[in-house]
Length: 330
Image (cartoon, rainbow, N blue to C red; front, top):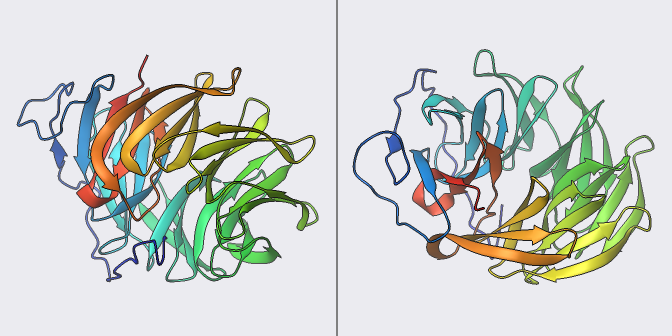
């Protein structure tokens, strides 16, 4: 969650909504259904559908034939959306200050920033089966073959959760205000927003093996094309890290407060906090190929992320309480 320059979440106790929740889609251009158009049209982007969700959607992931969206501005919830139809399948209460979502070990995992916990959701029943106490202010996740790792922004650590025992077994101190993580190249990589760096952790020894200086505001992080990539939200750039040297090898200017990163079909897509806009990076040229507007708002005070599902990009719109599904620009 963004603090100071980030919006604090209002926390309430959620009421359970049945799995057969009402389909609350809003029809937009390109949708196969009929109804009133509510979303503007932007050149180069085909809006396929929008889905209303609980207030303040932030975290997003795709798995089990669904898109999973964490909402944080009201009652903390996890909304399950059918990838193909856009129907809301379930709205699941989770923990206080729910923030991010990840998938692994046949489960969906939600970080509860204000509750210092992680909720484990069983997709077969759409219910929280266990709540795991963790460190202060958990946010992003990384999943390895043997563990779920959660970044704890308040503690300045990344914690290892044993998915067999559903307990936190260790913490590794990293940089100041860590935010997101990715598992790749035999390591777990963590973006440290306040530390202006990326930490590389060996998951076998639970030790930091490298601290890599970055541009201002490192947040979104992913692995793609033989490299680790990190967005510099406050530095208007995306940086490429060589895992062989643990050093930044390229810095690519990207407009609009770049945040979430997503590899798709040979390109790296970057979504900005302003607009939002989606920008395609060509990893062969280490350059921006094109940029497309998805919205026309100012900068939000939350992370802007995206996911791939049903051959399209899905973006939660925090201040509009909905998720938009757009075609991948050709």
